[in-house]
Structure formats: C-alpha cells, structure tokens
Length: 371
Image (tube, rainbow, N blue to C red; front, side):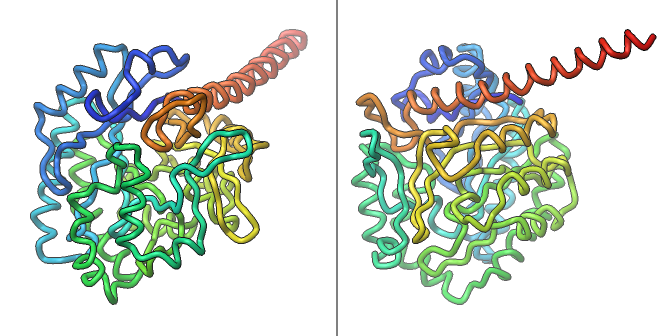
C-alpha cells in the first residue's frame, strides 16, 4: 500500500509540499494541471514541471487526479472525437513523466455534490454535508453560486467556473439522456482510450459518482457493485480499472463497502483507493466525519483489513478531511485532518502487519520444532 496526498499545486493550495513531507508514511503526491481547460491536451513541459516540484520534495508523481472528461464525450456528440484524441495525447504525455494511474469520473455536468461546505459538527469542526431536501429544492444555478461562495476563494475540483457558465445549455443537451445512453458513451470512450493506456503502461481508474444516485435528474452510472462490474467488463483489460472510494459508494447504505472492495481487489482491477468516513442519517442525508470508524457509519478498520488481506500494492489517499484547529483552506482539503486520517489508516495497517508477523513467526517456530 502506497500512501499519497492530494495536492493542488503551489498556486492553488494552502498546503505546501514541505508540510506534506512532515506527515509520516507519505510516499507520493496525487496531482493535476488545473490551468488547462477540460478537453485540451496537457502539455508535456507543464507535466514535467509539476513532477520536478514534487520530486524535489522527495515524493513521486505516479497518480493523476483527475484528467477530466469533456461533456461532449459524455453526451456522445460527434465533436467527442476531437476531445478523445486530445485525451489520448494527454495519456501519452503523462506516461513520459512516469505516471502510472489516471483517476477520472463520468458524472454529467457536476462532479461531487454537497448542500453545505462547512456544516458544524458537535466537536466544533466543519465538514462537507449533503441534505437531500435542500438539493432537491434548489435550482442548479443557485447551487453553483452557493458552492462558489462557500469555497473560501479556492477553485474546487469539478466545479470549474468556465465549465459551469454553460449550465443551462448543458442541461438542455442532457434532456432525454438515460443511464443506458451514458453507459454506451462510456463504453465508446473506454474502447478508444484503453488501448493507448495499455501501450503507455497506465491504468485508468474511474471514480464512483458522489453521491451514488441521480442529482437534478441527471443520469449516474458509477454507483454500485453491479454497475462497476459492467464498467470493467466493457473493455476487459488491466488498464481499465477502478478508483474505489469508501465515502462516495458508502453514502448509499445498500452498498456493502468491504464486500465491494474485496470483490474488485481480488480481480486486480483497483490501482487507487480513497478512504473517508461519513455519518449517514436515517433520512438519507450524510455528512463527513473524521476517518475513525466510531465517528461515522463506515467501518474503516474493516476496509483497511480487506486491503491488507488482499495484499494491496496500489495507491491510497485519505479523502476529504474536516476543517479543524482554525485552519482556513479549500473545503475538504486542509492539512490537519487529512494528516490525522493518514496516521489512523497507517496505524490500522501497521497493527495488521504486526499480527501477520506474529502469526508467521509462530508458524516458523512450530515448523522448526517438528523438524
């Protein structure tokens, strides 16, 4: 298991690489180029500059999150061909910089969706939260304004202003697009890009929808175990993989997260994992919590145990953290609580490793006695 930390770059993040360097166990940075418009080719020189900054501070840059997919691809428009060719070239350029995994999503228009970016928890921290009634009653344009106002002045991944300026025309284009249509468009995209990823030694890793249900009437397809099976079977290649995110899939209590993790880890199709905890309320609302199992509705200990039992050799990062200790940062992406999350995850892993060594030592001892 390779521990990583998402970083938005020196011009877009309150967290510095020097700060991340002080978190025990972090090996790599999960990065991206945020100044390149969605659908355009990522220039090799810009990728190499990001890598230089990351390497200078003792980290690898082997995971990119995200190379966003243009809406024309998701809509299946004729213009998708241009954007698919650009995506292929970006894959090639990233491979030249040593990137091994590309995380992406296929959510129409919106990326992750929340009704509140700073809901106060009983302990005084603030967190991202989702209240179904608020989302169902709000106009999408008002949602965008609220997200922008609550972002503390930061660019939020998936909520890029230049893309969301076209919100009304986008909704019109998606009118009548079904889940089956979206699956077909994803299949076409994967059939085009996976062979390139194979040639480049890169694993594509689609991220689950967050939350895993329809929002504003838009179709969502990366929502549960059955749909994940469909997606990896669209193109049967190790390069067609998954980013398993406990918090995204776990927002639906019907999703058995340890079972989902176990199933796809055994298939060898999970190069990247996000771990966070959430508290799910009886009405279906949820809010994010610390990573600790007893603070939320997900058994993080069991999830890490599944990773350990599967001998997970891929990349993992703590997902959204609380805002604690007065920190002012991009909602969900401060330093302190994600650092605490890392120590919790590594503490569980180290305990499991210690027990494994004890068992193996006992076994070796008993074998020696028999001899």
